[in-house]
Structure formats: structure tokens, C-alpha cells
Length: 358
Image (cartoon, rainbow, N blue to C red; front, side, top):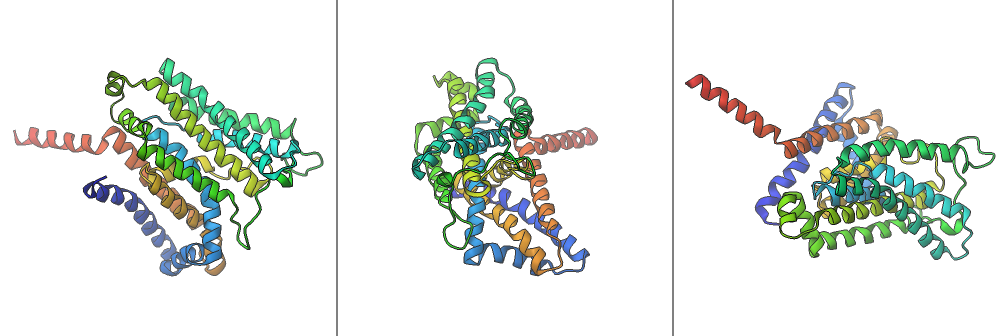
């Protein structure tokens, strides 16, 4: 990519962050605290200390994968909004495989769990993929709807057939020791981070150095022209959705085996790792390298929330406010880029000005 194109893309990523932090600073000032001190503690403790940085990388791993899962489809103008459901489906059954299948070898057990989780992610992604490819059904509507259907299905399974006996709250049995990723040192980071990093390198290679990567870009820019040149777009839609579902299932599996170890009704958090991945994909401009940086930064905000509450009088909810503002500004950018809202508004103003002068 030329240097001339990097400038606007970087500005479009940095500007929502600066605006969100600026408004957050005003809120902090209004409660009588110093925003520079609060931000310094929040980011310093999560990025500039060894333990804090390793914890940040640990929480960035699933975010990196969900961001990539969304980016590979969004870049082709295919809007897979079902990453959250695919992550939950994959994480749930990876946890079941980890708890119910007594495989003695730890490596084989983990590989089996990853195969189950990624397979579930792909399977769930195939429903909107086939409807989009062969019936031209809007994938955004289908994937959004299926998210909530999957949440209800897993709620039934975790409260009924797979509920842990004797537990005081709704959860599945804890995965066996052979399936767990253990912490490396005193921080929370596990070997799953390196699995996520390997997936990142693979996606980067596919998108930057393979024919499929160029086809993704071509479909995103002009699907009709891509079809006319002999590219079988419907097959590529299925491939991209399968890749996206596999990445989402991988994220859910890794999060299960390295952090949660059992499925609960709040497994993915609020709003959810899949939804956070959408923010990260937009913040990273659908570029693998940009998504890596955005995932680490967003994870630093999450890990820094407890520090800001511990070392200052600023409530940790300020981080949620900043994150929400970033989502708002990035959503405005996304809608403008897709529908050209700003260009239309300028055209209408220009037409009115011409009518007045006449």
C-alpha cells in the first residue's frame, strides 16, 4: 500500500480513539479528577509493566481472532455478524469435549478440542453462507438472528443435559487437566496466545500473499466484475464464511481452555468477544497488522479498568464509556464508507446553494 493511502487510513483509526478519550477526559474533569493521571495509570499498568503487558496479551488473543474473523468477510463486503454465536458454539462444545473425553495425552486432547470448536464454528457459519451464496439472502440479517438463537440453545443445554451436577449456578463441567492451558509464569498468559499469533500470521499470509487474498479484495470492490472475470463468487463466499467461522471457533475454544474452563451464561462477557471483534476490525481497518495493534490496545483498556479503579477515585466504568464512544464514532465511519452519507449530504447542500444562486 502506498504511503499516500496510509495517512487517511491511520487518521480514520486514530481519530475515533482521540475523540473518545477527549470526551472521557471531560467526564473525568467533571468528577474532580486528573484525566492525565487516570489515563497514565490505566495504560501504564497494562502496557508498561511486564506482568501487565503479558496479561494484556492474554486477553488480546481471543480479540485478535474475532477481529480477524470479521475482517476476512468484511473486506469482501460480506457482513458476518454471527461471530459471537460461532464463538459461543465452538467454545461450548470444545468445553464439552474437554470435560467428557478422557484423552490421556495433553497435546492430543487440546488438538481434539480445537478440532471440535473450529468445526462447530464452521458448521454454524455455513447456514448464512449457503443462504447468501445460493439464495441471495441478506447475511447480515441471518447472522444477527442466529446469534440470539444460539444463545438460547446453549442456555438450554447448559441448564439441562450438560449442567454440572451439584453446582450452585448454571455451568457445564470443568474441562479436564489434560485439556487446560496453564499460565506461563506469574502472569495470566498461556500458550494459547502463541496459537492465536500463529493464526494471525496465517491470515496475514493468505490476505497479502495468496490468490484468495486478491480475490477477497476484488469481490469487495466489485462482485459483478469479479463474477464476469470467471471468479466463482458464490464459492468464495462459502470459503470466506468457513474461514471466519473457524477463526471464531478457535477464539471460543482458546478462551475456554485458557481462561474459563467451563461454560457459563456469561461466558463471553458483555457485550461479548464477538462484538468486541467487530470494533477491533473497524479500528484496525480490516488489515491483519492493524487488527493486532487494535486488539492489544483494546485489551489494555479492559485490563486497565481495574487499575484505574484501584489507584484513583475514577470509577472503572469510565473505560466502558470510552469503549462505547469509540464504537459510536467507528459506526458512523462505517456507515459513511458503505453508504456515502457525507458525500450525499455535501451534494444536497451544493444543489441547494446552486438553486439559491439561480
